[in-house]
Image (spheres, rainbow, N blue to C red):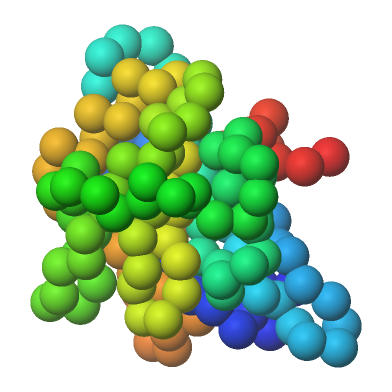
Length: 160
């Protein structure tokens, strides 16, 4: 499904220390292709214990990121992007702001990168401390990358 992705397939690179890729999910169909995709990761929570992270890229209205964040509706909500951003991601040599999204039981951040929504959803909510430093992202669809991704057991956050 990811081969035909119409949206970026983001992965933090380099991965945070001790983190592993734990799966992929996609939203779309055979006619329109993949309009939303997610990369699941797991690793140590900066505040102690294990953590999970889901990076979601999607076209507006798909709702994959909102689903992982436990929101009703397909977008970050009416209070989105009020105030200063809560974090930054870097793509190439450009920074893109992310805003905190009110969610229950997780830390959720959203913004726009390359014409698509980008969501970072982390469990438990204390894992949101990973956003203190800018996170560099790469699109797995880009050719010629020399990345040896470490894989772990499938994420429990992915759909069955």
